[in-house]
Length: 158
Ligand code: PNS
Image (cartoon, rainbow, N blue to C red; front, top):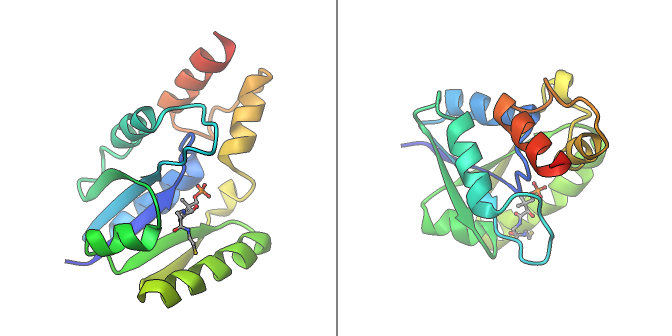
């Protein structure tokens, strides 16, 4: 069984994330989407809400499961017998940051990191920008799954 993890905050999931998850699901037997529980960071959606959303929007991939984790990602990998992490790279600045994390994670545990170039259609996309646009009434349809679009409007505009 070839397993991989797609980790992140997913607050909320964007179409860029979903593209990486879907492409990983075509390459691996099992993809675990791991949602970071970060008590220090204020989030728009709770971890449970993010898990529900992720489960709904990845329904078409039977080999994708959604979990939460806290602490080190490599500990989660070890506990779940997952030997590799997939990370989407949008721009060169992502690579600078991700390379350091990948090397540290490998040094800590031997868990590999595989970089997947983001679909250019989504290379400008991030959860933070999506929230900002939605908060000020901008149109985020096409940037996030329809469910997320609806939930963002409900949450941010009452
Ligand atoms: O979507 P994000 O917020 O960019 O995801 C970042 C994430 C969750 C992948 C990263 O912060 C992470 O792996 N956090 C867990 C703590 C950890 O293992 N840190 C790495 C030290 S090298």
